[in-house]
Length: 535
Image 1 (tube, helix red, strand yellow):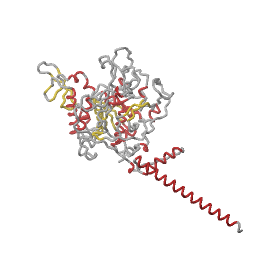
Image 2: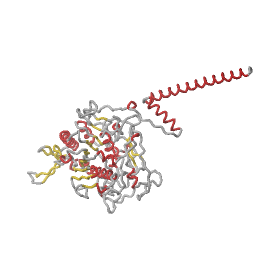
Image 3: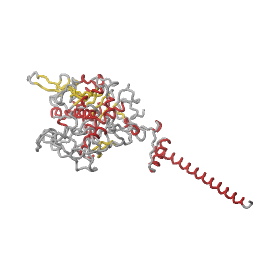
Image 4: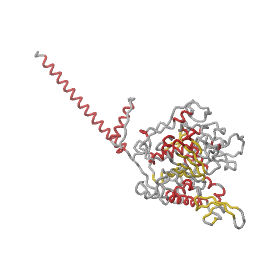
């Protein structure tokens, strides 16, 4: 018995020492973990909770587990650029397609009485953020379209009708916020590039009966679909995929009207087709007058019966009044453009809930670009007036009418920028063409300079008291010499050298779908959707 005591004592001492050593190790590990957590919070400029989420997600991701953290408002950050000079110089620095650094903006809001941040007068507000990238790809199945051969992509992945419908689901609410807590209102959608993406288009080529012949490239014989396999990727955020049902819900009981030239008609037909794809009973979508032809009339309206809403197009290529009168001296009929009178169709769209304007291409035609005996103010017809000056006068007439006649508390207003043309070897009527183009421009140094007209637009929008969303799509379109109808502007036309080509408008489906995707994203921010707004 006596000999067993030292042995028992020895075991107790050994156990105590082991326990003490373990406690020291636990203490050391806890101290190191706390130090690492604080260091991560300081480096990433996030809250300790967000830093803990980051560390935990990395640890669990390495072990094959999943870990999710829903940040609180305290972990959000917002960076707002300083407002631009309200009186820019007449020759601002160009930047190959998206204006000066302050004008690739989401919204121009200069109303001192608006609910926007404090000193919003004469300022373009813009937040730039990084949106967590959603998974926009969906499973692809076979289609009848010819598979392109000049693009790097996986084999046997083509568009399917089923996927064209399913691909319009909204992005996951947990992924709608940015990595640092910023939202879609912080996104600069216009500074980016085109990236290869095999996701199906919002609607299949040839599937929408409301695409007019001039834009229906596939029905007119274009067999390659390479140009549909690109996605516009902003540099610091992502654009959510257009969810047709959600957009129709936002437009329930409302009117959305496109006002402008044939490029806006291009965009109008695109939106009608995207939204139609999400409607179960396609017979509930119809043009209210029963027209099948969508080109010659000045007003069209598609009604979505289930949602009691309409998507309209109002032709107004200059936004101001085209005029005819009899010359008292010669008795001849003369045409003028009345720069100080809003186009008479304005009262058709005055009370719409969403307005999308544009005016650009018609100002480049010979009559307007030369400016001889064409521009009129009051009773005066200018013998000569520079196009840029005339364009400025016309936009001031439009902006004043909007400020005086449109209720900004009811109506959301967009102005779409210049859509680039890609004629080579001449213009549309002098042998210019773009057929054979199969890939976008990849070198930004080859992009054309920012159009002078868009400098005018940006200046006028800054001066308005009514908030206007500026769709600055010029740069993204300048890359895309491959996506025009070119020789496929008419059906059953014999292809021959010298034929008239269309290198201004866009095939549908195509680029206008992206413009409407941006409109959808911006409407999400105006409808106070908690999934996309942090406030």
